[in-house]
Image (cartoon, rainbow, N blue to C red):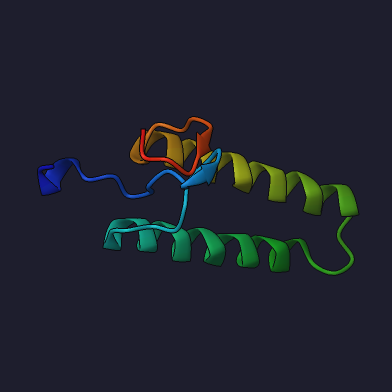
Length: 83
């Protein structure tokens, strides 16, 4: 496969979803995502409403899943075989 079209997030061997990143771009996304998540939780503060924390975390997870759909291998249920 051409390096330009390499998936940032490969599909998991078992189950549905993606595994750890395999490219530097994927790792930048993961580290950046974690940084924004932690900064956002800190910005909301300890006295912030719990619903704000949950809503922010859900929104961040949606963003990560969308990036994985865009730059990752197409997800499907896998049973461990390479078919």
